[in-house]
Structure formats: C-alpha cells, structure tokens
Amino acid sequence: MTLAMDILPDVAEALAGGAPVVALESTIISHGMPYPQNVETAKQVEDTVREEGATPATIAVIDGRLKIGLSEADLNRLATAGLRDVMKLTRANLAQCMAAGGTGSTTVAATMIAAHRAGIEVFATGGIGGVHRGAETTFDISADLQELAKTPVAVVCAGAKAILDIPKTLEVLETLGVPVITYGQSGFPAFWSRASGLTSPMTADDPMVIARAWGAQRALGLEAGCLVANPIPEEDEIAPDIINPIIEQALADADTQKMTHGAVTPFVLQRVFELTEGASLTANIALVLNNARLAAKIAGQLAKQPHFR
Ligand code: PSU
Ligand code: MN
Image 1 (cartoon, rainbow, N blue to C red):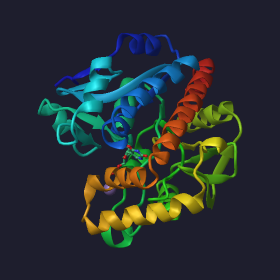
Image 2 (image 1 turned 135 degrees about the vertical axis):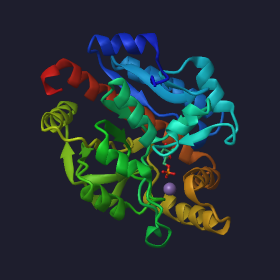
Image 3 (image 1 turned 90 degrees about the vertical axis):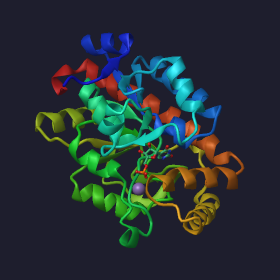
Image 4 (image 1 turned 45 degrees about the vertical axis):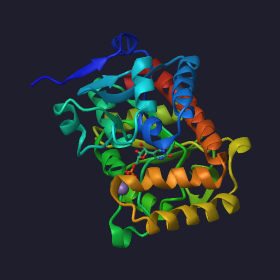
C-alpha cells in the first residue's frame, strides 16, 4: 500500500535541493486559536519562515491525504471547521483518519511523524503537550513526549505551558532520552512567561550550536527528536504572577466540566483566553512567530552544513 502523501511543489523542490524547510503543525489552527486569528497567524508564521530564508510546510490530513504544505483553501478549511469536523490527530489515530478519508489537524506528535516521513528535520510550534498536573491519578501524559523519544525531528517550542506539571514533564523527557536545549537563557521557559523557575538541562546561544548538536545526535544514530525551548520575547510575556492564578482557575473549570483525553488542552487554552481577555492569544501569536524564526535559522544552518546530516 502506498502512502497517500502530497508534498506542495515548493516544499518538494526545497527538499530535493537540500534547502532549509520548516514543518508547522495545524492543531494550533483548528484547536489552539479562535478564528480569524488562527488563519492569520498560520499565514504570518509561514511568511516569517520565508523571510528567514526557509520554506514552510504546514502539515494536516485533508480528505484522507497527508498534506506536507497546505494550500490557502486547506488552511481556511481547518481554521473555520468546527472541532467536530476536524480530528485532532496524534500517533494513535493518524492512520485511521487517512484510511477513512477523514480530515484532521496534526498535533506535535503527528506532525513529527509526517515531517520525518517527508524528510523534514526541523519543526516549529507554540507549546508541546506534556505531563498534566494530577497525572499521578489521571495518567494524562501527552503522546508528544513519547514521539520526541522515537522520531528524529528537532521541535522548536516556547517551553511547556504552566497548565502542565513542568517539573514532571522535564523528568519524563530526561527518562526518554530527549535532549532539551534552551535558547539564550539558562532557565527553562514556561510558554507565556520566560521563567518557569526550573533550570534547562542544556543551553545554547547560537542556532549553529543547536544545529551542530542535532547533527551529532543524528551521526550517533539516535532515533530521538530534540526539544529546543525558545523563551517568549520579553515585551510579549505575561508575568507568572498574572498568568498563574488564571491557569489555576482554567484547570479548576476543566475539572468541574469533567474534561478528559484530547479535550483538556483545547478547553484550558480557551478558558485562559477568556480569563485574560485575549492577552494570552496575543502572547501566543508572538511566541509562535519567534519560534518560526529560530526554527528557520536552525534549518538554514543544517542546510549549510550537510555533513551534519
Ligand atoms: N499548546 C498550545 N496550543 C496547541 C497545543 C498545545 O499552546 O494548540 C496542541 C499541540 O498540537 C500539541 C497538543 O501537540 O496540543 C497536545 O495535546 P494533548 O495535550 O492532548 O496531547
Ligand atoms: Mn492528554
């Protein structure tokens, strides 16, 4: 059986020529942001990648086909469809969605699988899934973490959201052998805030150094991905003492409304958006663009130094 995968012509051309390509996820479009900011941001992220000299490839499943690079019509469809019409795809349901001819947006886990299949090594997103608070009773640990352990793609994110248990998330990443490198500061960032209070396992001040580490990891034959944590720009951050009580409230609401499985993260993000009167979204957009820029720089370094591959 052949893989039902379509690579946009400019992405295919870049890959064939060894030019830098950056993968982008689509759950952030369908489940992570409201319309119309979701589609505006998706386009801005692609433009930012291009401005930095790389080719963007936003990934999703459209009518059963794995799309590496989305047309404007596909982007609009994901941005405007209701949550019931777009599946949230991870490792477990990706193949089934394709077989059924379905349409779904890819989380970090599913985007990594697709990117690797297409030959893309660098991927930019906002935040990864992680170990949820209370995981000791719910066992809610995002499949993103397992994926980082077994699929060789470098994922640039803004750290882990404080809706997660950040210390446990870092512990699991360590157990799984996933390198965690923070860009430009020693502390691991917490998505909306630059500081989580935790020290990052590793730090790098230069995209070239991150590219080198990635090359060395690949040369060793390690199958893992790599997590690059890029702190939100100072002017865009929301201070922990402002965001933390709001997160507590949003988590309590998720509990009251008995949210489980894949519904938890989108619900909490939406509640934080409401409770911050939109400020969380403004920060979210800024950090995604910031991550796209860094990912393009890392991809550029990798393309310049093919011996790292
Ligand atoms: N964090 C965000 N926005 C998002 C997500 C995370 O700020 O849209 C999405 C990503 O696609 C991530 C997924 O991979 O949520 C994790 O979902 P879960 O916690 O259900 O594994
Ligand atoms: Mn979960």
